[in-house]
Image 1 (cartoon, rainbow, N blue to C red):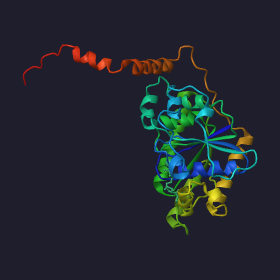
Image 2: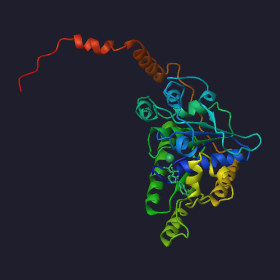
Image 3: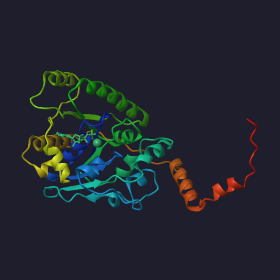
Image 4: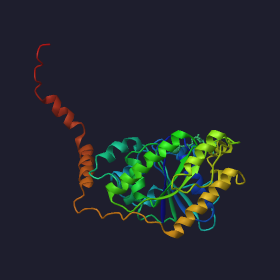
Length: 311
Ligand SMILES: Nc1ncnc2c1ncn2[C@@H]1O[C@H](COP(=O)(O)OP(=O)(O)O)[C@@H](O)[C@H]1O
Ligand SMILES: [Mg+2]
C-alpha cells in the first residue's frame, strides 16, 4: 500500500482537485484506492464528490484520530458510486465529519502529535491511499506527512508558490525529524491553474520550479470542465474523459503507480506504549462527559464566593 499526501499550505492551489482526480484515475485503471478528506472544510467530500458529511453520531475519522472510537477503518469508508472503476479496482472515501475543526486542538494535546493518522490507516487494504490535506502546516498536515510514503505538491506558477515550496520543504524535514521516520519522497510538483496561452510571467515561474530537485509532473491548466464535473459530484476522468485535465490525471496516476512499483519507503509506525497517555486522556474525558451531567458546574455554584474588593 502506498500512501500519498497532496500538500501545499496555500489555499486554492488545486490540492483537492488533484487528490480527487489522481484517486479517480487510479481507480479507473483498476487500483484499489482510498481517498481521505483531511481538510476540515470538506471540499473533496461535498463540493467535488457530491457526498454527505458523516452524521454526528456515526463513527468518523475525527473520532478515530482522538480514540473516541476504535473500530476498524472499513467502518469509516464510503464507496463513491459515480466514478468509472476498472476491473478489480475500488474508489472509497473517508468523508469529512463534524469535529474535524475541533480536532486540531485536541490532537495538539497528545504528548506526541504525529502518528495518529498512520495508526488508523496502517491496516487498511488498498493499493493507494490519497490524503487531501488542509491549507495549513498544522497538526493534521503533520499527521498526513508522518503517515505517507510520498507527496504530491500542486503549485501555481507564480512567485509566492516558490516561497511556499521552501516553507513546505522545511516542514517535511521537521516532521521527519520529530517523529523519527525515513525521508518522505517528493513524487512531484503538479503545476496548474494557469490560463492558456501561458504568460511570460508564468513561464519564468515554471522555469524556477524546475530548479528545485523535484520532478515536475503533468500540468493541470484551468478548464471550466473541472467545476462542471464537481457540480455533478463526479471526477473529471469520468465526467469528461477526453479533456486535457482527465489525461493529466491519468499521467499522474501512472507516475504514482510507477512509484508503487519502486516501493518508496514508508514510515515504521511505532508500537503503542503499554500505558498510552492519549488513551488515558481520552478515557478520562469520555468518562467525564458521560458521568458529569452538569454536576461540576453545580458544585462551583455551591462554593462560597470570595467577596470582590471595592473598585
Ligand atoms: N484545472 C482547473 N481548472 C479550473 N478550475 C479549477 C482547476 N483546478 C481547481 N479548480 C478550482 O479552483 C478552486 C481551488 O481548487 P482546489 O482544488 O479546491 O484547491 P485547494 O484544495 O488547494 O484549496 C476550486 O474551486 C476548484 O474547483
Ligand atoms: Mg482543498
